[in-house]
Image 1 (cartoon, rainbow, N blue to C red):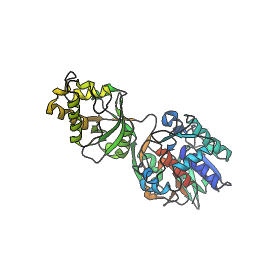
Image 2: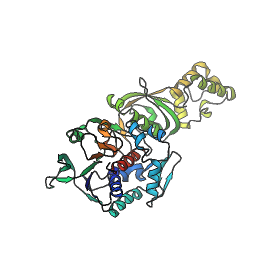
Image 3: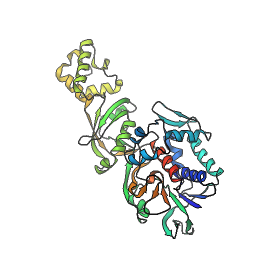
Image 4: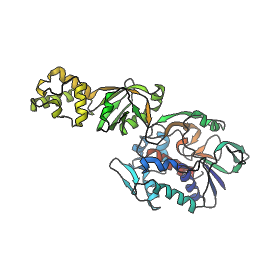
Length: 404
């Protein structure tokens, strides 16, 4: 059996290895359009590679996928985070789980993951041909014929093909799959940070708060988690999660919208007022900046006091009902204008791809083209930050590699 893998990324290599473990006599060739296999793995997690997530609850894991939740819930029963950790550790890559449940190699170096995949592929006799981009696929009898973007490469026939070419930033990159009869979903960016060029809060670069509650007025979008103030705006897990779940909404708004921040993660306004009242009772002669009832970072607390139109030299006992309501309002409903986005580090994740209605979720085989399979980000599956996107790659590639 001759099998072609289109794409030399995480899903491409993992599916190739899966095939050889299931069909040792199969000939497996990976076609990579560049000279750099596993490039995204190398740069992920700041060069550390957030290989998966430590959560082992399938129902909880599935919630981390704004697109593809139902498919992932089913697929994770076959190959989940526990399987991923066992797979790499059994092949000489010890892993550790951080407090935030992100899983990294103990080496803190993505090369450990890259080298493991490359070594496994070499040991199994998997060949990777570089500078071999695919232009189109034709059905020839019971085989699939690959046509290359390079004119000096003749077409080649294979018994089975797995497409693991990664996300496409533009709809044009999916046209070749539409010609085969697949429905596609327009790709838009996911996992990005918010630019706020006109907001003075950017002067607090480096300040982190955990947890905060962020939401988008006029929508149901709302997330909770750690937030980081940057020199361009807001970042951190809570913003990245919001960007993932609101990817299409933000795209429709051309990345210009209002953001509400609840700095104290408390939606009950009366409870916030009660805490401020208690502070007044216990520290009436103290200056506002010197007592922080919600434990916010000092620089942020001073900023919010001034945003509430209160003086830094005012005593708590001088606050009054009007001042207290102003402060409570800023603490729980702090509004900012977002004007644009910034990519998260060097990572690129897309919302969109091959419509999952075109795929058999049990096998990852195309419903419209026999012997053609899909794995990884080419599918309309994407997760929040935390190792979920790599897990989707490992899971779908493992299943596709069964060639059922």
